[in-house]
Image (cartoon, rainbow, N blue to C red; front, top):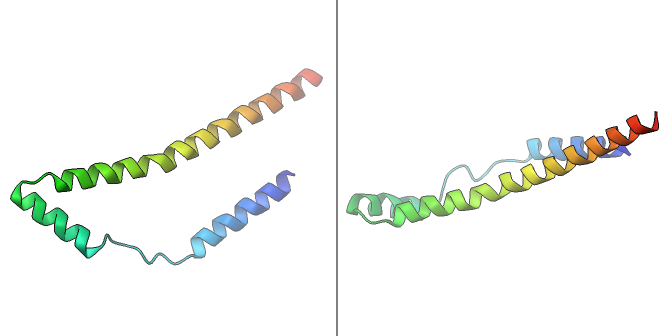
Amino acid sequence: MMRILNRIFLLLTVGLLVMPFDSVAQCAMCKAVAESSTETGSTVATGLNAGILYLMIFPYLIIGAVSYAIYRHRKAQRASLESED
């Protein structure tokens, strides 16, 4: 079972590394609005930055939750193996 999971993880990692990264920068319209609003003293750029941070935190929360679940599962497996011995 672990071999299959390791192979799937390896294939996903290689697949992500091989994919081209076309979206390197933000769109020109967003950049223009953020720059012009900053110069005029508007809070549009602040709202845009807050939105970006809001969207950015969810992948980290998901990765953290999955990592914690894997940690708990492996800890329980080790404990059950030790109690059998």
